[in-house]
Length: 139
Image (cartoon, rainbow, N blue to C red; front, side, top):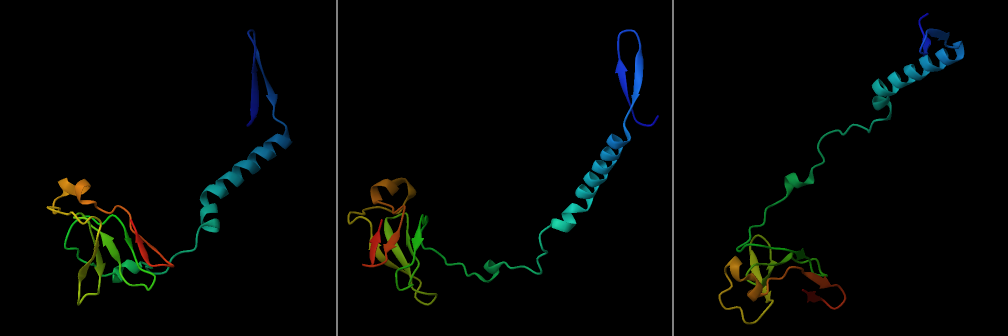
């Protein structure tokens, strides 16, 4: 017999034939499993992407005169971006011709705030957001 179940006991063993219904069910299940594994991904796979949709290939790098912008935002008129940097100042981008301009300071007593070691004393803005209605800068 091709398919059979063995029943073991201490004295002897006997074979019990598998029913025809069970054999059919096992073969159909095996065929479906093989089809799902090998053919299924091509049937239910995602659509292929034609060409690259990477919009960052046309992006322009904006150089920063100092280190460490943690956050950036645009004002309600769409100008900017504005960034808070290591020395505690908030800079505004005015375009490639005008570059960065100092927009505000997070603390009036800045002293020697040009190094990373003095960031806590200089009031480095870790978050920057515009309040859209009144045009306030929230730090």
